[in-house]
Length: 148
Length: 292
Image (cartoon, helix red, strand yellow):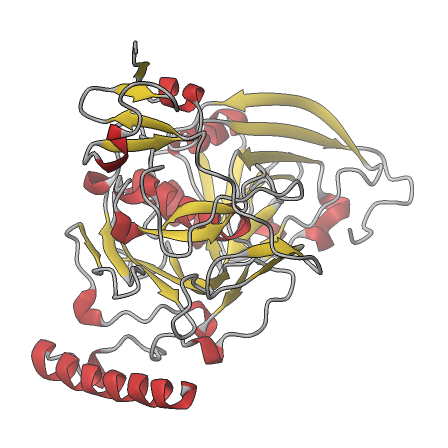
């Protein structure tokens, strides 16, 4: 599975159980990134994405257990670091701003188990700039699965 | 003396509650679930490394009857000490700025001091700090919306919460009920901090909901909240910068005057006076230099 997540300048994801921000241009980019593959998410995320994404959406509260190899998972308000060994890659969108946060992105890309494949800059609808980083998981050398 | 003032405040609060209930029809049943009365300084915990602290489990103190899908903004009159009070708004896209922000240097909020420290980001300890952020309401040089706030409070404390509301409104075209309340200890000219409350209207708070107190402090700096005077922690108060080098602009003619120029002194009392900290700041705001 390939995780898709959004973070702010301090790796924050949520505040008071709510997403920090959103951007319609980012959602369009997520759809392009997924292409023909399935995109899994829960009802909270689906309420933001809606039906008109043009991609194959799979909505379930148990989506992390349903997604298979090569499937994309849009993660916002559920823990997922325990699935580290199943995560093939991460698409990380970084807002160019800082928001309040009490829940943070749990993976450490500096732990030696990741390779940065590409970086792109997006001009968002309500954000001047969104940085997109795509990471690939490296073969397990013993670091995988450690909590950051 | 302080005890008497607190008793007085309590009495005013009780009277205020009576009139609020009697005049607006707001009853305890009308309050949203989990709501409590607004914060008091006595209930705020000591600062502990974070620029803000969560109040009331992050639930704002709005009543159901306050939820509206029409944008508005209200600012309290300055009190007898020249201090700002509650700023209250329903943020919608129609309230957001359409023009570039201009200088606010002419406003001197209560407790204002121009003072620099090397340890402060941007050097200046104090910012003219919008209660309702400019990006939300477009309200700029309004003295009822500007308090003396530390750089830390402005940038690390308040801005992230303003960003959250601004993005949400732009992306959804929904409204956010929004209130910022400066809290002062007694007659202090500087607020100890601000309570920030926000709740998205159309989705009943699913998008945005918070209730926090942001501290008006600056790590490494000691502040006298009675006057705004400050010093490096453990050292004597720093002298405010002399204002002699300040540039005086005329907002009507868009001409600025430097110290020593012909009309510089005349501009001091002009109703069109705009203060800039440098010629470059004046030029950036579209002003040109007086010829004489």
